[in-house]
Image 1 (spheres, helix red, strand yellow):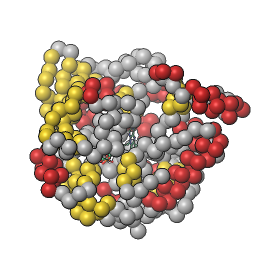
Image 2 (spheres, rainbow, N blue to C red):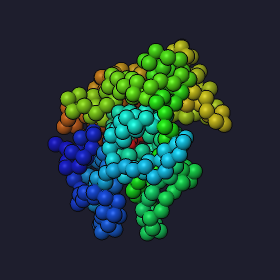
Image 3 (spheres, helix red, strand yellow):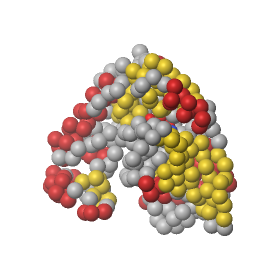
Length: 345
Ligand SMILES: Cc1cc2nc3c(=O)[nH]c(=O)nc-3n(C[C@H](O)[C@H](O)[C@H](O)COP(=O)(O)OP(=O)(O)OC[C@H]3O[C@@H](n4cnc5c(N)ncnc54)[C@H](O)[C@@H]3O)c2cc1C
C-alpha cells in the first residue's frame, strides 16, 4: 500500500513523513517553517508533486490559509490579494461571479492559489503570469517577508524562479483583473470551437468558464473522486521547446506522420506537442504500465494511479519507458511537469 503522504496528493502516492503540520494563516505558515526539522516540504493541494515511496525525511507543512480581498480598484482594474491556501478554482469561480476577467480560462485546475506562480499555471491560452502583479513570500535565505514583483518572478512556460527552489514560501498572491462581463479574446482554437466563436472573439465570462470546465472534464482534467483517470498530476510532461537543429531532426524523423503540431516561439525555438509525440511513439490512451499504473483513458499526457494502490516507482517506470521510447523514435527529450520529491526519473 502507498504511504501516509498519499492521502495529500492527487496521485494518491507517496510514503511517510517525519512530521506533518497544518498551517491555517500566513503567520502560522512562517512559524511552522521556522520551527520545522529540516528538510521542509511545502505542500498545498498535492496536485503537482510526485512523492517517492520512501516518503519525505523531514517536516511537511500543509498550506491551509484562506481568503481574498480587494486591495486596489480603479475604473479599469481590480487587484485582489489571495491567501496561498485558497483553493484555486474557488478563486476563479469568485472572479467570474464578480465580473472580473483574467482567470476564466484557468477554470477547473486543481490545487491552491499559492502554487500557481510556482509553475506559472496555464491552460487554454491563459497563464497566471498575465495577471499576477506580485507574490508575497517568506524568504528562507534572508529570513524576511517581502513582495516579489511579477517582473522579478522569472515567469516562463511552466516555470518561474520558485520551481525547484525551496528558498521562498508563497504566502499570498496579487492578481490584477479587469472588470468586464466578457472574457479576454479567446486564444485557443479548441476553446473557440467549443464556444462556437472565432479565435480573438470575447464571450461572457460564465460561458468561457463553463466551456473550459466541459472540455477539461472530457479529458479527465477536473478532479473527480469517482474517475480513476483523474488520479494524476494532470499533464505529466511539458511540451518540449526545441532549438532549430533539434526541430529539423524531429521533422525528418516524423516525415511520414503528417504535419506535427508546432508553435513557433522566441529566438527560433519551436514548441511541439508532448501528447502527439507520446501517441505517435506507440502509447495510446489507456496504455497500461506496471502494477496498477496506466496512461489515462482520456488523455495521453496524464499518467494515472489506475488501481488507486499503485506505487511511485511504477509510475516513474512507465514515465521512463515513454520518455526513452519518444527519444529513440524522434530525438526529442520529454521533461516532467510535476515536482519530483525524493524520487527521480
Ligand atoms: C487533473 C489535473 C489537471 C491539471 N491541470 C493543469 C493545467 O491545466 N495547467 C497547469 O498549469 N497545471 C495543471 N495541473 C497541475 C497542478 O494542478 C497545478 O500546478 C497547481 O498549481 C498545483 O497546486 P497545488 O496546491 O496542488 O501544489 P502542490 O502539488 O501542493 O505543490 C506543487 C509544488 O509547489 C510547491 N508549493 C506549493 N505551495 C507552495 C507555497 N505556498 N509556497 C512555496 N511552494 C509551494 C510545492 O512545494 C511543490 O514543489 C493539473 C493537475 C491535475 C491533478
